[in-house]
Image (cartoon, rainbow, N blue to C red; front, side, top):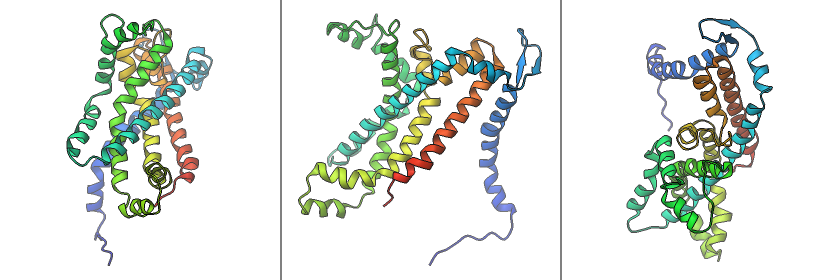
Length: 294
């Protein structure tokens, strides 16, 4: 028999919802509204006064070739980070799910990178691949690779992708492992009795049942690559060399804080917010159709 909680009045439910609503309004809706208002205004060179410019900031924005180039950089970066973080996360979850002795130890170790902030993760990888003192940079030079990400845009992009994806692997591993443990063991045993190989069991039974988890993580990783990788970019490459790693969220900060173009920076943040909302809506609208829920 289903049991439901029934409130006699509206005051107590409203009191329960009030803290979450307050946090959402203060930390999301209010800053978003401020950004929209700021994007419609322009300031003088000294920041002493502002005036209403309407869509002028957006017109200048899309006429800027550097801003348009950052779209391509962000698209490549986000897709690469999502794929590079999802695949190892799934592989580690499958391997950890098979461990019997010391399983808690392995799972704890694999989860440790998630406790590291993106900025710290960027610093760690920067030291490893630093052209002057980096251990891995020296190993690459020993293998004949002319490594210097400070001058080579492709190397810089590869480094920030690797650092950002490494930070997110633990998060994906946790959810994939939970999804694997939720799969009924009877299905696996039945397919094994029918003679299916481990590889066939994974691709025909396990992986389809992980579709809801994979879909959720795809959305989360795309949003992560768009927003939460600022610390990695800022500490490793600062958008360089020659803007090769200047993604949209970093350009928002650079133009607003360094360039003091508050109106243009706010317009960029509004565009970025619209892009992320649009991508999320598209993923839920079209990709979810291919997701099979058990």
